[in-house]
Length: 310
Image (cartoon, rainbow, N blue to C red; front, side, top):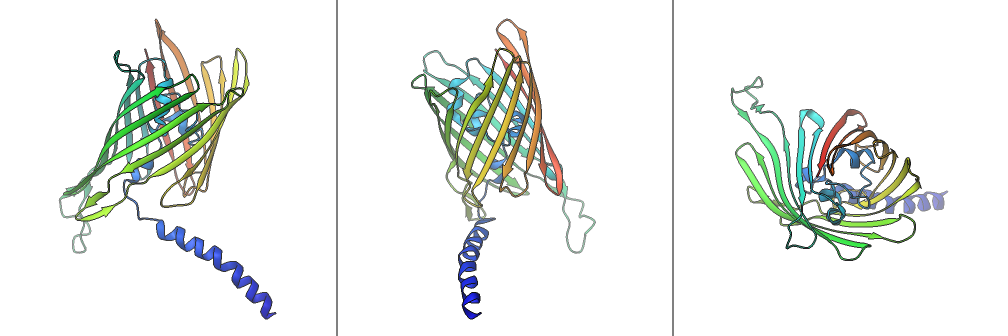
């Protein structure tokens, strides 16, 4: 019996040690709004987008994908986040004649309404209020070096504000995208948020550097129907390794239905969404996408995106 207890104890120690190490990392990283996914289409696929990356949200998921966008694009995304917090992103993808490849500008903002200042002696409020929010501005450059391989880099400036305090930092994102040549199989890799610490009142916090790798392929393709499958794996600095999987069905390049699932995330589980794409004139088109993400015991998150390509 003693040996049985000893074996059980030895088996539990490594698991407990790993759990303790994982717990120690939680809450040690700043710039958390940088981890909020961009784009209703990508989020409807459960965030499995690092190897898809064929619209303006590639700026976030994998900057190498910007090189594959054939036209200029104006893109707007809005997310009704938790606790009445809103997240909005806008992007512009374009070409400059003397520069090979593609360029993109983007801006992100996380914001909420002004909140009343409360104290122990004035729990109903002091009559004053405070604001809190985050903004980020970025420039992306991407280029296809061959018909199968693309690479991209983004530079970002971000600023966080809380009441009278503010902090800023610079970060970089790097990504690659490779067409394997086997059917439509693509492999994507990206490293996000490499950069300087953000300092609040002399207290530096590191940025949420995330490594992503994924693959995607059209499982079925015809003149009227297409079925895309994508899977991602990510390694955040303050939590467990994670995985995402998504499916997208397209009908005549007009209607799209999507679904996805996120594994080992703190809140997010399944997601779903739809999209429509229509021609708006000579050599131009518009697309609108919607996504819903389940957040477990908390209210679900709604996203909407609009693209205009010309």
